[in-house]
Length: 446
Image 1 (tube, rainbow, N blue to C red):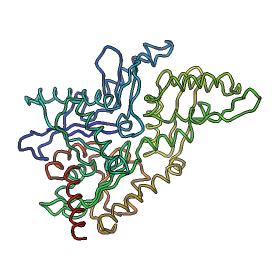
Image 2 (cartoon, rainbow, N blue to C red):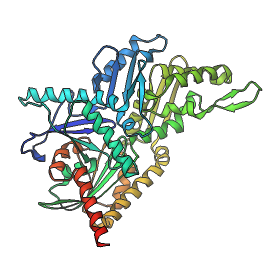
Image 3 (cartoon, one colour):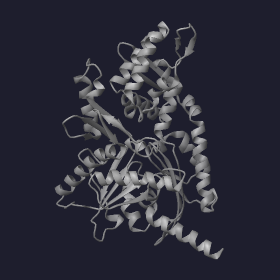
């Protein structure tokens, strides 16, 4: 049995024998580059897609190989955070080399390569992995409406099926983290799972043999959104966001925000209709003020060379730096048109994300209210997910739960608990059945 934490930023795989498996038997699979595989996909004609570090290397090589080629974007594609596209109900797919690819098929390219590596890892251990069942992690909330939520879950299921898995079940990600981090804990535990794409919370009570989930809550708030906040506040102006263009009647108008703000849409930009954007930018170059023309030419080059990932990586590195230092710099260039260095401070960054911290605190309180608990009744809080290391969020939790907050296995706790959670009857399907039975019983009593 496989457990896959298909994360926005990273993917982790565990395995336990299907027959008589127990969560404690789950082992982390290395997959050729350690236990953590960046959720990146490189795709080029007439070759096997690559993922993770291999995808990053292939992307860097392609940038050099096609440098100076008109529209190099037509020769290769590089995707990040495919999970965010999969859970976006408005996104159906994208054209790759003239062929429309559904988002499920795109995600399947990534998951199929994950499965291939996992099968090879098991074979090296003398295990046979043919047709292993899959326990797949998912955020608590995929859509506000229950029917829409199930439709998006079905997209995840279809992606896994296309990747070669036939038996697929789901576990809420923070529930898996709770099982791996605190299944033996006696008392109330709150899991604060803050990753690249979502913030998910589970409140559970352990009593030795039993482990009860009291409440689950989630919102679309993750590290990607924090990076986009930085990009929109400080970086898009270097690509013409504050520029002007002149109409045929001589009027000066502000640069269309839908164009320049795409620079900050790190997962959506590689999936977007680049041809439409490029055409619009080319027209604006001729009509823009002289001081804005190079910025727009740089934007064209940024789009043609598919540089969203590189800019995202620079912002992410600065954000991580601010967890330990008071200042950090974001250095980026698109020769010969754009070059900048933006110095950011921790105070500025924390002011920028203050509304996000407030939203996270509201979600914590909502989860506790749903569980019928006060903050003082929680015995332990476990932080998991890379974004949970951002100091502003860690301080918020410490303020609410003084002396009771600890860091779990930040990047592997979800994968480690997926199989165990399913075996304990804590999967999504059984949770829905319990909810339906409760609602039915309440109706009969009424």
